[in-house]
Length: 307
Image (cartoon, rainbow, N blue to C red):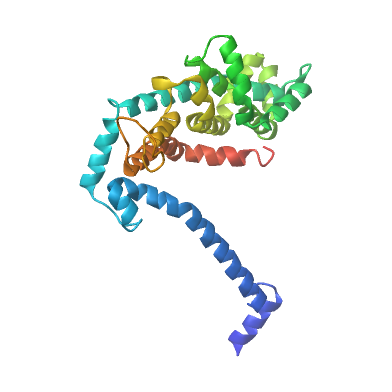
């Protein structure tokens, strides 16, 4: 009797909601949606992880989620590493060089720019901020042709600068930094440093920048990821052996008979080898994410409240 009374009291207080048919249906629908989208994203990844352990025939005819053998994985790895004398390593090296060089330039420009927009006053500040927001709305693919024509006019096509310079243009990083400095860094702390005689450059370098580690990591991660996965711009500006891994994957895809039956290439690529190359292309981004996720979470939440 006491237990029943307690249950009624909890129900009246709103702490125990009775499970009506409508509530049950809502929960079931929510669970179904979660399961559907989980499978939608997890199943292809699971297939991609298993595919390199099979040969081409097994991949097409056997159970898609049956696991192959380590020997076959080694054979696929050997096939990928010997493709055009290890061209995949050249592609990966190009990607690392382009993404890292552009990342350094992005951080050198974006962090001070966001600080200046957030915490200093100068003529044209509002116009510059509005311009930054407008440029963020322009899709990167829409800029490929204008950027190509501009680079062609200054004879940079085929040069590493044809990729590094456009990659370094990152208005989203400026905006992220602006939001962080506007909402997190105390103006009183900066004013105290100025009163003590510190120059504006010293205030930024010794006071504001050490407090901005989370947003620096966040901007760096987004910049590196965007640069590493960019396809269209490198495709038209650095062809051949100077291409990054994403363009290289497209070349491998063109040599897979299942995707290109008319290919006359002397060296064909099996589907499991293509799957292995795909995993290799995303591994650096995954490694960067795993090592920086603590800073990423801090950076994404730090601007939510006034510090």
